[in-house]
Image 1 (tube, rainbow, N blue to C red):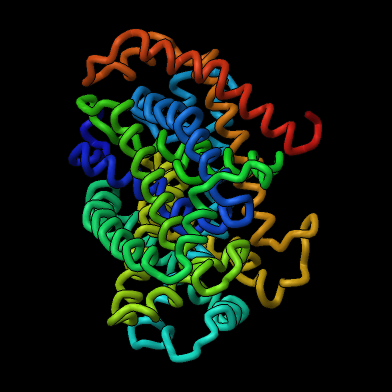
Image 2 (tube, rainbow, N blue to C red):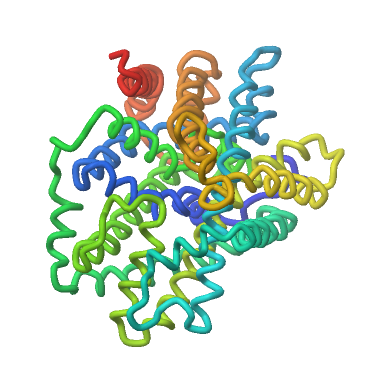
Length: 447
């Protein structure tokens, strides 16, 4: 790898940073409400199946492309398939990350605001209506735009410090702490009276509640949670040394992602059913349930503040990857300053995110295909751009990329049998694209 290029300092740093990029909002915020709206346990099983069978091979693929090319997303495909149109995959990734970050940062702003309010004890109160509080915060244009702006400023500052000094340093410190506090919350959550109904909803599958749309959502959630499809992991792995096993790293990220999703379900659904709340509450589920849970704990305000801060940092580790792919795409030729590009990109994302930030207030009645700007952006990313990006990556791996390079990257630093490589390759060449097409066409009613 060229010496003038930033690089992860260790395998642990890469795995924790990749896990942070994957976990974030996908597992902690989006997974619980998507599960609640799509049948509970059956959706969770579909999510696990898609993560292992489809998501994991795709994650390995992005790692192979990135480290094999040692370039960021757009340049990687240009190097591996010169004088062809395959660089569209990297460009799609940059565009998709831009759209994703425009509404993702809105949620990050919500968490930032909740964190600020929780420190002086302004969230947990006697007889508080947490649904009303959430509506007041998301329905106030000034508050939501302020939260959006502050969240993006934090992202920009970290990205200016680069891979090792910014992203990796934050991930190494904050991801382990998040796991610890999540486990504490789960232990308290499952001891509530009536918690068994929530556990039953989450862990006992009822496939009668699954629709074609639910299957598409489960597939999209596996992509969203692993951060595959937008070549984010292509960019991350391009900073990785040759002494790291890519299948092992991808497996570690996938397992931790499933584990965090499990913790999220165990933390949320017992509380939802214990307090008679609706599991189908949608994007606001986490913001209405968490305060309810911590209010029942000794020193609940302190625990809520700490957890919200850690949740905020988990979201940040995920959003770092989105801003990084945008920034690295425009600094690949080394003609532009990373700092300058990061600030310009952050400003453009801020402007683009304002309509999503106003989706619960000023623009609540503005609809795109009967969806608010926020929901339309989410649908576009999760159900169209992400599956589309994953399909193109599968086709690139299966029919275009040099097989010798793929095999060398797959087997670097491990002693996997040749059959393991062949299994992964055949899954990527046939199973992944066919599955994506079937699920997507089924959701449109064509199949």
